[in-house]
Amino acid sequence: MDDRTGQTHPCPDEMLTIAADKRELLVRVIEFFPYPVQVFSKDGTVIIANKAAFDVIGIKSPESHIGKYNVFRDPVVKALGAGEKVREVLRGRTVYLNDFNAPYKDLVRYFNVRDRDIQTISTDITCFPVMESDGEVEYFAAMFFIKKIYRGKEEIEWGKQYIESHCLEPFDADAVAKAACLSKTHFTKLFRKHTGMTPYEYYTNCKISRLKEKLLDTNLTVRQAFDQCNMDYNGHSARLFRQKVGLSPSAYRRMAWGSEQ
Image (cartoon, rainbow, N blue to C red; front, side):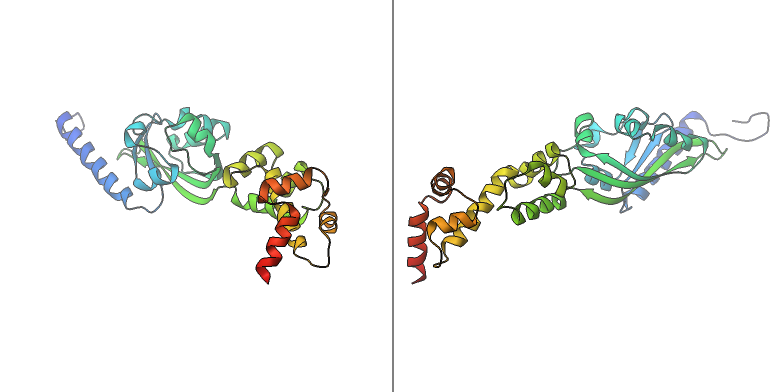
């Protein structure tokens, strides 16, 4: 078809074929990228995502994501104040989002992603326009450079170390959470998720383990072993020992000494 400039343009059917070919080529190219990549139409709807994107983000299926997710309506993007910056890509600019820390619980809440053992995905994102021959933005792509997938295990270990080194002192939930650099509520929830017990239960187990060590010391009476662990021999502590170990402190000592002979 000729226009007034004398240039020839493809007919609509030819244009669809070219668009399909370009899209197929684009899919084949980004699929080989080791980094998560997503391609969006100008209205912000995702039209292509590679396997790395599905694996890292935890998207359950292409059907639940492609053609449905829209970056400009993403509440996580809005909450992190990145929405307007991403829109700059529509003006032909390359946009860099550094230290984009997405709480994974929000991804689970808003989108069809797997509920995995993840707290936060920390990433740098580069958004760049894909231009038509006339210089107009045809669509845009986002490439994710994952910096860290935060699972909270380091903080749990810090909490454990604090409990173990202070198990002879009265339990202080605030001090333990502070040592883990987390709020008390968040730390307790995370601790239970990773260990299957509360921080106080872990503290109790540490005291019992320390008492068992002291009971093996032949230079100490049973009462002295309790005293050195700041535990009450005649009260709750003795009952707790029996509950946890299945033996009284004296019976445990006799059994342990007998096994060493």
